[in-house]
Structure formats: structure tokens, C-alpha cells
Image (cartoon, rainbow, N blue to C red; front, side):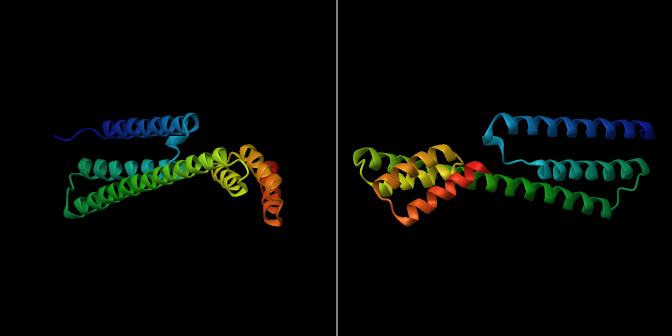
Length: 169
């Protein structure tokens, strides 16, 4: 029993709207919480395009009744590409989380050193570097200023100017 053509079109339109809705929810969650920043606009386009492509192929072949070996090959390649994409997206997220954990450990160690030995310019500079990596440039500037007070070297002064330029941009 074949389904009428307009029903396939309706299913395709509903699927497309569902993909757009999911993309909208992902982009809103990205702006609300930085931990979901792994999925960008390009990622949403890839997922949406892949979904629509696979659904269109299945719809056309189901409507025409041409479930051939070629169809199964196309479906397998599309499914495999989605699985690989999800795997690499997960790897990207895990890598980011590991980097954040390492950065937090560095921050904890540098802060402990700086509080135990407030005259240690290297600890204050390390805190400045950590907050620069976190893109919290005001804190980085404060810590770098402290490092410059304790050790007014050329390198420290240059780094302080670089951080000031990052704040301006």
C-alpha cells in the first residue's frame, strides 16, 4: 500500500519544521549556558541538511517503490556520516572539558601559591595568564598589575599592555 504523495510532502515539511525547532532550541541553550557551546550554526546546518537529505531519499524511494541496493547504500553512508559526526562532536566536548579541568587545577595551584606567598610575582602572572585564557580580561589585568608591582620586568609590562589591548578590542 502506497501513501499518497501529498502525505510524503506533509511529513517532509513537518520534519523540516522539527529540525528548525531543534536548531532554535540548541541556539537558545547555547546563549543561556556556555557549557552547551559545542554546537554552532554550522553544526546545526549539517545535522539539518543530513536529516532532510536522508528523509528525502527515503521518501522518494518509498513513494516510487524503488528500494534498491543503491538506496540502502546511500542510507548507510548518510547514517554513518551522522554517527561519525556525533562521535567527533562528543570528542570535541570531552577535549574542552578536560582543558577546563586542567585550567581550573592550574588556577587553584596558582591561587594557593599566591596567597601563601603574596610576593611571588610568577604566581600572580600565572593567574593573569589563566584568566586571559578564560577571557576574563579585567581579572587578568588586575593580577598582571600585581605581578608588575612585584617584578617590573619588560616582559611583565609588555604582557600587561597586551591584556589592556584585549580589553579594548
